Image (cartoon, rainbow, N blue to C red; front, side):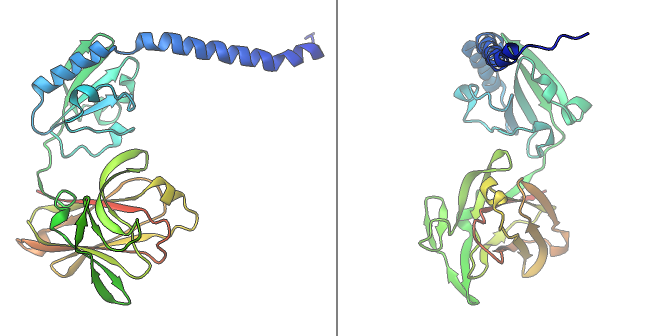
Length: 300
């Protein structure tokens, strides 16, 4: 027959839980640093990356928050995402991954299946440096974010266009409202920072971003997304991104009220040899809290 704990024993239960939690936390903070790469380990790994880095390479770390490596190679292309296996790495030829002990198992998907070929593995103290060969990378012919200053930006109000000619601090200023601009930004979309074009829509009418001379390629790849606060807005309306090539509609992308960074492709073969006039048109039925962002590239 089981003995029923006394009332005094039950009163000690909360204290016991507090003591147990405190001991666990103390043990974690005392022992955890002993399993992490030292500053010297990380510096040596970074120096090896830098001395063997090639055009088309990029760098990532596991866990995603392990930022010390940036002290050595932070100026090189970086992939700062949580879900590396699901990331579109098609721009890159090779990927260097600096891994803390116990985190290599996170590299699933194409890393585990052999789609990404492990070419090099080196131990630096308590860390492991991996280099993967990726499938042949896409050739980027035109990066719309990088070439944003070449665009012509205008807003519409009552059907009439209003040019946004003032370029200031990496953006075209459209009104005196802080959010009404089209510009280069790094913002969080989903769980990760992204280099994007901020294009907050307006209630008065669509915003157009026109590129007058874009080279021809195989496809136009577009990504769209909302910032997390915008995606959480209960009354948030969808935003529509229309893509027009040489005066012809080519895509209509509706960004629903959800968090993430979502791709869409437009085949360019039907539009001839180029160069092309490409227009991105951003609109919504309700512009409140619509922190909308996009990127686009012409790929071969």
